[in-house]
Length: 108
Image 1 (spheres, helix red, strand yellow):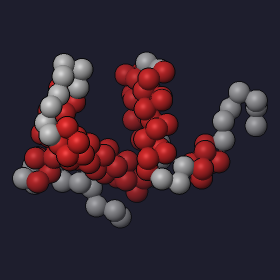
Image 2: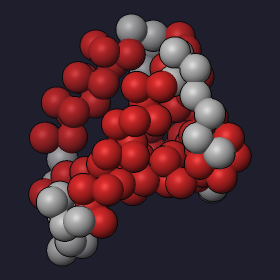
Image 3: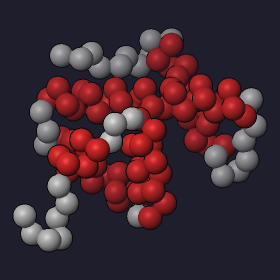
Image 4: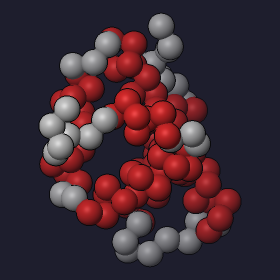
């Protein structure tokens, strides 16, 4: 493997908890052009196994629902201009899932 490449398999095996992945994701979002980065992630997932594609979408939806729940627990709805939109969208997605307007993909 060329020196500039990373071993994704090894990194994924080192992430034992969701909190670890959350820290890595926060660091990535803090360091890179996250719009370009997120588009690249979405494009890459299209190349993966169909089951993993469903898992990816479910992961994103579940993460947003968890974000909405945890935000409410920790901050009781207080937001500021930096995260107001994020909290609002996460709550809307949670409500849409609860109202069955959006269905999380099944694991197949």
